[in-house]
Image (cartoon, rainbow, N blue to C red):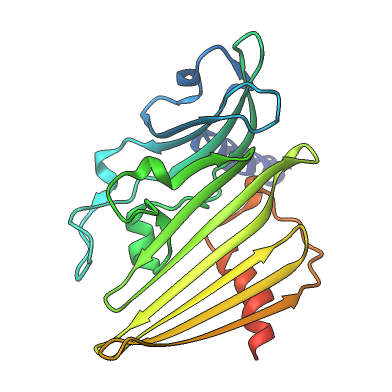
Length: 254
């Protein structure tokens, strides 16, 4: 009996330890700042109507503010030390009484830190204008939430735009636009993949350009997809975009 009691005590300790690591967010609050935990800071605040009630809602990206999470990476293209602080994205609906309700949250590393992205070769939040204006990485357009991520390598770059719409009481992925650019001294090859998860259609647009002569070759392919999965913002992870491309784009090309 003593061994069982010790075992269950150990399990309880582990369970409580994990709970202590988790961040707790209010379900409702009067101010956006009330959703930012202690030792975290706001990174992006984007406003716009997401549920068609003609009231501006808020998309909030927050980042842990811990100096210990800045580390040096050897041979990194980013300036050292690199930021490894985790990031969380929150979606808040505002009502007619100016109260905010938390309707979506992703703390599953969908929005990765620059350091983690650099180490693992992943995309992270960036400006679609390729400047330092990170606020443009998250936008609201036509009642949809759009998130732009980018990975920049020595002779290549990849980017993805995720499009979410509030339906079925959650933010579901309805579109994914991905681009990969690979170049050398002679050629630049650009591949564009556009997946519409609502119409279940894929458009592939490949462009190969010879730099010296400006000779350009283009290829456009359209396919119908058998998409059965539903991808929600709350459950997206750091590999979700790659997994979707592997399943619906790269499998088709084989």
